Amino acid sequence: MIRPRVEATPPFSIPGSIKVAETAPPKENMGNMSQEPARPSKIEDVSVACVACGVGHFAGAAKLLNEAVRFRDDGITSNQVLDDIAGAIGELNALERVDLTPEKLQNTSNWERPIADEALRESRKLRHRLESLGSMEEVEQTAADSEVFYKKLFRQWFKQRFSHLSSEKVESITERVGKLGSEDKERVLKRAEELIQEEG
Image (cartoon, rainbow, N blue to C red):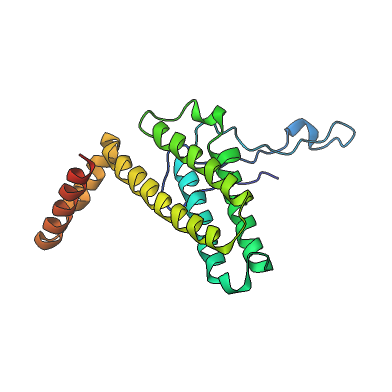
Protein backbone atom coordinates (compact mmCIF):
# COMPACT_ATOMS: atom_id res chain seq x y z
CA MET A 1 0.00 0.00 0.00
CA ILE A 2 1.39 3.40 -0.95
CA ARG A 3 1.09 5.96 1.80
CA PRO A 4 0.48 9.61 0.98
CA ARG A 5 3.12 12.27 1.36
CA VAL A 6 2.55 14.28 4.53
CA GLU A 7 3.95 17.74 5.12
CA ALA A 8 4.13 19.32 8.57
CA THR A 9 3.66 23.04 8.21
CA PRO A 10 3.66 25.70 10.93
CA PRO A 11 0.97 28.41 11.10
CA PHE A 12 2.87 30.39 8.47
CA SER A 13 5.18 29.27 5.70
CA ILE A 14 8.83 29.02 6.66
CA PRO A 15 11.60 28.12 4.23
CA GLY A 16 13.24 24.87 5.31
CA SER A 17 10.21 23.60 7.27
CA ILE A 18 10.15 19.92 8.16
CA LYS A 19 8.75 17.56 5.53
CA VAL A 20 7.90 13.95 6.17
CA ALA A 21 7.65 11.54 3.25
CA GLU A 22 6.40 7.99 3.50
CA THR A 23 7.41 5.55 0.78
CA ALA A 24 5.87 2.39 -0.59
CA PRO A 25 7.56 -0.93 0.12
CA PRO A 26 9.68 -2.25 -2.74
CA LYS A 27 7.56 -4.12 -5.34
CA GLU A 28 9.80 -7.19 -5.24
CA ASN A 29 8.83 -7.78 -1.57
CA MET A 30 5.07 -7.59 -2.18
CA GLY A 31 4.44 -11.23 -3.03
CA ASN A 32 7.25 -13.04 -1.25
CA MET A 33 7.13 -12.94 2.53
CA SER A 34 10.40 -14.86 2.94
CA GLN A 35 12.41 -11.87 1.81
CA GLU A 36 13.44 -9.09 4.17
CA PRO A 37 10.43 -6.92 5.12
CA ALA A 38 10.26 -3.34 3.94
CA ARG A 39 11.87 -0.90 6.35
CA PRO A 40 9.83 1.91 7.85
CA SER A 41 10.18 5.28 6.19
CA LYS A 42 12.46 7.90 7.69
CA ILE A 43 12.00 11.58 8.29
CA GLU A 44 14.01 13.59 5.80
CA ASP A 45 17.14 15.13 7.19
CA VAL A 46 16.49 18.77 7.99
CA SER A 47 19.68 20.70 7.46
CA VAL A 48 18.50 24.26 8.14
CA ALA A 49 17.78 25.73 11.55
CA CYS A 50 14.17 26.71 12.18
CA VAL A 51 14.60 30.16 13.72
CA ALA A 52 10.86 30.79 13.81
CA CYS A 53 10.41 27.52 15.72
CA GLY A 54 13.10 28.60 18.16
CA VAL A 55 11.33 31.91 18.71
CA GLY A 56 8.14 29.94 19.35
CA HIS A 57 9.86 27.79 21.98
CA PHE A 58 11.17 30.91 23.71
CA ALA A 59 7.64 32.35 23.69
CA GLY A 60 6.31 29.09 25.13
CA ALA A 61 8.85 29.21 27.95
CA ALA A 62 7.94 32.83 28.75
CA LYS A 63 4.22 32.01 28.85
CA LEU A 64 4.79 29.03 31.16
CA LEU A 65 6.79 31.23 33.52
CA ASN A 66 4.02 33.83 33.49
CA GLU A 67 1.63 31.02 34.43
CA ALA A 68 3.91 29.98 37.31
CA VAL A 69 3.81 33.55 38.64
CA ARG A 70 0.01 33.37 38.78
CA PHE A 71 0.44 30.71 41.46
CA ARG A 72 2.96 32.69 43.52
CA ASP A 73 0.82 32.38 46.66
CA ASP A 74 1.23 28.58 46.53
CA GLY A 75 5.01 28.93 46.83
CA ILE A 76 7.94 27.75 44.77
CA THR A 77 7.49 24.13 45.85
CA SER A 78 3.89 23.84 44.66
CA ASN A 79 3.31 21.25 41.94
CA GLN A 80 1.82 23.84 39.56
CA VAL A 81 4.82 26.17 39.82
CA LEU A 82 7.31 23.32 39.50
CA ASP A 83 5.46 21.87 36.50
CA ASP A 84 5.43 25.26 34.76
CA ILE A 85 9.16 25.73 35.39
CA ALA A 86 9.87 22.20 34.11
CA GLY A 87 7.76 22.92 31.01
CA ALA A 88 9.74 26.10 30.35
CA ILE A 89 13.00 24.15 30.64
CA GLY A 90 11.60 21.62 28.16
CA GLU A 91 10.80 24.40 25.67
CA LEU A 92 14.34 25.74 25.93
CA ASN A 93 15.83 22.27 25.51
CA ALA A 94 13.83 21.83 22.30
CA LEU A 95 15.07 25.21 21.05
CA GLU A 96 18.71 24.32 21.72
CA ARG A 97 18.74 20.61 20.90
CA VAL A 98 16.26 20.34 18.03
CA ASP A 99 15.67 23.61 16.17
CA LEU A 100 18.97 25.45 16.54
CA THR A 101 21.62 22.73 16.65
CA PRO A 102 25.14 23.57 15.43
CA GLU A 103 24.67 21.27 12.42
CA LYS A 104 21.49 23.06 11.35
CA LEU A 105 22.96 26.51 11.97
CA GLN A 106 25.65 25.87 9.34
CA ASN A 107 23.14 26.34 6.49
CA THR A 108 21.07 29.11 8.03
CA SER A 109 20.65 32.29 6.02
CA ASN A 110 23.03 35.16 6.76
CA TRP A 111 20.27 37.37 8.10
CA GLU A 112 18.82 34.68 10.42
CA ARG A 113 22.11 33.48 11.85
CA PRO A 114 22.67 36.40 14.30
CA ILE A 115 19.08 36.04 15.52
CA ALA A 116 19.58 32.29 16.05
CA ASP A 117 22.87 32.86 17.88
CA GLU A 118 21.27 35.43 20.19
CA ALA A 119 18.32 33.09 20.86
CA LEU A 120 20.73 30.30 21.79
CA ARG A 121 22.77 32.51 24.14
CA GLU A 122 19.67 33.80 25.91
CA SER A 123 18.09 30.34 26.04
CA ARG A 124 21.13 28.87 27.78
CA LYS A 125 21.21 31.76 30.28
CA LEU A 126 17.50 31.39 31.00
CA ARG A 127 17.72 27.61 31.33
CA HIS A 128 20.53 27.93 33.88
CA ARG A 129 18.55 30.55 35.80
CA LEU A 130 15.53 28.24 35.89
CA GLU A 131 17.62 25.36 37.17
CA SER A 132 18.78 27.43 40.15
CA LEU A 133 15.62 29.32 41.16
CA GLY A 134 15.14 29.68 44.91
CA SER A 135 12.16 31.99 45.42
CA MET A 136 8.98 33.20 43.80
CA GLU A 137 10.57 36.64 43.46
CA GLU A 138 13.24 35.08 41.26
CA VAL A 139 10.54 33.29 39.24
CA GLU A 140 8.72 36.58 38.72
CA GLN A 141 11.86 38.43 37.60
CA THR A 142 12.85 35.58 35.29
CA ALA A 143 9.34 35.53 33.79
CA ALA A 144 9.48 39.29 33.13
CA ASP A 145 12.96 39.10 31.57
CA SER A 146 12.01 36.19 29.30
CA GLU A 147 8.82 37.95 28.16
CA VAL A 148 10.76 41.08 27.20
CA PHE A 149 13.39 39.07 25.33
CA TYR A 150 11.03 36.85 23.35
CA LYS A 151 9.01 39.88 22.16
CA LYS A 152 12.23 41.60 21.04
CA LEU A 153 13.41 38.42 19.31
CA PHE A 154 10.11 37.83 17.50
CA ARG A 155 9.86 41.45 16.30
CA GLN A 156 13.43 41.36 15.04
CA TRP A 157 12.93 38.08 13.16
CA PHE A 158 9.54 39.05 11.71
CA LYS A 159 10.66 42.46 10.43
CA GLN A 160 13.85 41.09 8.90
CA ARG A 161 11.92 38.27 7.27
CA PHE A 162 10.00 40.84 5.23
CA SER A 163 13.12 42.67 4.20
CA HIS A 164 14.55 39.39 2.79
CA LEU A 165 11.59 38.17 0.77
CA SER A 166 12.14 36.54 -2.60
CA SER A 167 11.13 38.47 -5.72
CA GLU A 168 8.20 36.04 -6.20
CA LYS A 169 6.85 36.85 -2.73
CA VAL A 170 7.30 40.58 -3.25
CA GLU A 171 5.44 40.34 -6.56
CA SER A 172 2.61 38.35 -4.92
CA ILE A 173 2.24 40.90 -2.12
CA THR A 174 2.35 43.79 -4.58
CA GLU A 175 -0.39 42.13 -6.63
CA ARG A 176 -2.57 41.67 -3.54
CA VAL A 177 -2.04 45.25 -2.38
CA GLY A 178 -2.93 46.42 -5.90
CA LYS A 179 -6.35 44.80 -5.52
CA LEU A 180 -7.15 46.70 -2.31
CA GLY A 181 -9.44 49.68 -2.17
CA SER A 182 -7.76 53.09 -1.92
CA GLU A 183 -8.24 53.43 1.87
CA ASP A 184 -6.90 49.95 2.61
CA LYS A 185 -4.02 50.40 0.18
CA GLU A 186 -3.04 53.69 1.83
CA ARG A 187 -3.19 52.10 5.30
CA VAL A 188 -1.06 49.10 4.24
CA LEU A 189 1.55 51.23 2.48
CA LYS A 190 1.74 53.62 5.45
CA ARG A 191 2.31 50.73 7.88
CA ALA A 192 4.94 49.21 5.59
CA GLU A 193 6.79 52.54 5.54
CA GLU A 194 6.63 52.70 9.37
CA LEU A 195 8.12 49.21 9.64
CA ILE A 196 10.93 50.11 7.24
CA GLN A 197 11.75 53.25 9.25
CA GLU A 198 11.71 51.28 12.54
CA GLU A 199 14.12 48.77 11.01
CA GLY A 200 16.50 51.47 9.75
